[in-house]
Length: 304
Image (tube, rainbow, N blue to C red; front, side):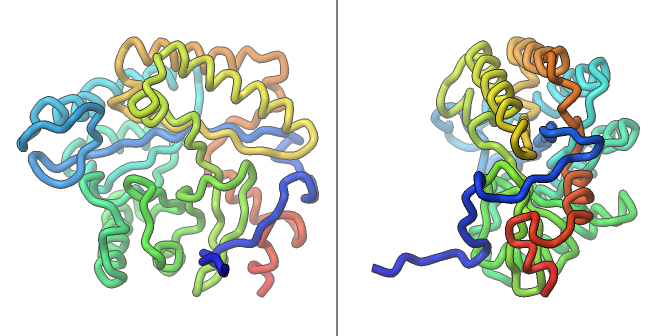
């Protein structure tokens, strides 16, 4: 039986790849990815932790809105307190709804990552022309406010159509975060040239962990700390990427924020923290682009 393939990358076992270092000979690249999501009221998709009610589903809409009104500001304060960088996967509708949020991101010197228009829609529901319009609209909004489009992209709901990587490359994106297939960056094939895939962990994402799999805040802390400790050990033999995916309305709740504080303090206080590169995905993409050919899986695409 012939199995359908995606054609974006070839199989590459991680243990057989050449090694390299992150800047300053660091071994583990660590980045925080904060999802900043905005939803339509009474229509479209919603990030619902319980059975959805009849529309307008005020309870679940307001729970999500708490993340923008309260949760994100507590997270910003924690990141400032610990002097940690972050990237922000932000719906473009945030610019109109809550302009204070992108202003705080600018003040912090953090990175914007494209995350669609709103999380009330997903790209897999659209044909190619409509999806191109969606992407172009988001890029245009970012250019208007930031002077340039986003370097990277994470689709709402991590959803893609068959042509999403092609459209993102054609829109000027350098990297994508939709494919959690590896612990190292890899180059992906598109019809318009290579597109870098940067690891984005699903297993230590606060939303599926705590809302879908129903882990407690303490369990999520233990899982994430264990994940970090093991990856730091593994990184002694090869460079790896550790991403911590967060949502404003999940970890922004006070009891979960306490768990996040525990995670981050553990990482910062780790005896081998000097081997950790605290960074953002755009910086990872910058470094990967400097490596010679034959190092990063799929880099033969870059030479074509």
